[in-house]
Length: 466
Ligand code: SF4
Image (cartoon, rainbow, N blue to C red; front, side, top):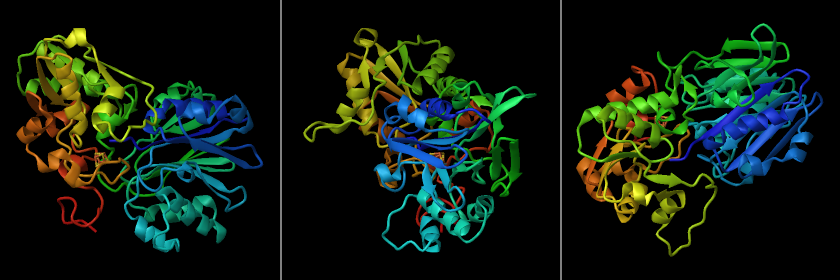
């Protein structure tokens, strides 16, 4: 699975903010490594700089100096809809209105065909859903509406997941869809008594890196307007469900461990996942190892609860960007070996419990198990800190078709055989919820098939498909 995107928006009166925005994007790099971009407003015009690549390769001192002004939004991107080429990099800019406007979007819309018809886009013309939103807003602004009015008209027509940072000259809007699928939080520069600026960001470490204080999460359906005068919050859409539907995989895998989501630190929740997973059954083993990165805290929790020694079984190469695999190579095995290398002296002859966050197609997991056996592991018992992934995601996570999801077509025992491990167990949904300390909050559609919104015909369990 690939992360969706990271967004940020910053206002700091009389201070240049491009370097802060760069730092925030750097902190959100894990949410998208295909492209990065920034739009700033210097009192006269909006400047957009974006390119393919990691944040530090897109921006340098010279470009940051040229991104002037006290208002900035930024974006890190992994493409889940539309093209992965440069034209799909964000922020998306439109020249409508006095200064024009720019949008950074995290999420995925589920009614794009309908929206494209409304925008008059011809069938077959590919636009990212973020471009589509920009187009719909620009149509209204060109017809005389303010951007704030246009947002109030267009956003209720969108279905699916969106956390947005929108720059309009001397205001930045932070908006979360009515379900709250993707995270977005508010931060403050300066003190409570003397604020020096305001920030919205996908995750709290983006605030930490610029020394901003975490204030709160943006509520589902809420819009905050950041200006040099402060923050005005408005509930522009009713929350679509009694409880927030933040993606449960933000806790399992996507978010940084040092992030706070729904009031919980992600690392702590991951440790608890491991503790509860250990309580589900007993297996005799010598060493508990985690698959870096998100499997490691869960492995720590598993080891603490089971009394089996925690150790390191593999090392991750942290510098993986875009990789290329020769056509004659075994693609999955090569991809695993580029990313992970076993610590042979730690695992040779050992009965391992290997904790990972998820199994999607199963091919990567199979290559991982083979690598550990090649390195001398005597037994490999896989423990997974999410329940079986059985349904595709429509809310901004890039997942294969249902037929390609191993758990959709195999029982747990059939999966064990396919992966070639000695035993396999998944955390139950009840224990995952208990680890996050939630009841029915969070989207879990890819685990249950119960989608909060309409999804394409034939998918999902409820009779609510469009
Ligand atoms: S379907 Fe799964 S991956 Fe997608 S938002 Fe819901 S919980 Fe997250």
